[in-house]
Image (cartoon, rainbow, N blue to C red; front, side, top):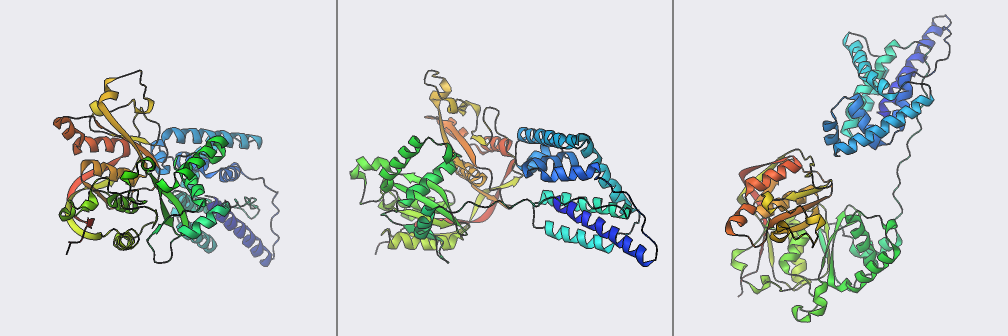
Length: 510
């Protein structure tokens, strides 16, 4: 929007100067025009451009583009309540700023904007010639906008046409409005010293898709662990009680040998994915083998982010002792590259398990025809009425729905609390969809990318000690997916497709 305003003003200024030059060449004196003050819409342009983006976008979408609040909230990926509060704040701020200039309330000015767009567009449609300079400037703005936010880009093209239409009607005395000061780019804070040491040990090299970092661990690992936990929990470290922070750090150091970090590298950026704790093994050495903390199938699943039915143990290898429950064979931290091709990731992980962990396994990517659910629709978060935003529930029937989970009270002793098992998970929309597939035992696939945001919490509800009928109901696709659709707007259609599957196996003994 700001680019559009600047481009149009440049065009209007150029036209005015050209008119004056032509008058001088023709030997006539340019008409004296008294200085003009910016028009209301010019002031409105300035004040709207000065709003932070989170408040400017609702004004543009709801008041200028005249889209419904429901559509605008969906486009911005925020609840309607949040949109309404941002819109109210933006209106109040615009009203205050414009009132100081002796102008009308912003709602009245915004109401004029659609008419201005229509009138200016109609002028071109009526056959008015557009100066070449205006065309070039408008085309340049359009190309620039191809690399920016689509919502702002659409408005920009309309605004360039609208205000450029004013060039045709502007008199030679029109003076250009004062430019808005450029908004300074937000600078990333400098990387802390501890991160430099951590990066040196954990960063992947070119061509690496996964690596294992074995103990002894760096002391800086605790800083990364703490930062990742706070970020995952949406906690501002500055607001954490120093005593609590110190206690968390002490525990992290104490349990360092009994925890595993899973780190993701995106370009040069290292981010915390998750961690596994095996601290309970400290007091049960009989369950440990050396310093191994988790099983090989847990290792493969945690590194790749895949589990059944995306990852399967070869039926011929299922009875191998390697896959026995409690057979801990792997330890160490793992770093994976974001978006790594599955076949290359599997090949490098297999080598690490064999050479560094002495686990003789094979990881093979195969194409198999399976019945899958094809995910469609547009992701639109609509949590249940009993949940805060960004929290969802996975359930088949309300008989197995524990609404009291967040506010569990031993004094209540309700039947639902006693008969329902509820587990809490967190992740992106992609991980939520995969979890639903895991619960149903059916793979999820999608032809268009699912959104990376927001971070979700989802509660999975099932019957505790279920009968056969209740267990079947818990995994009824029609019921579970109907509830998932109501909360996300996604649709699920069953089809047969060829899909890649990661197969874990043990080579035959000679």
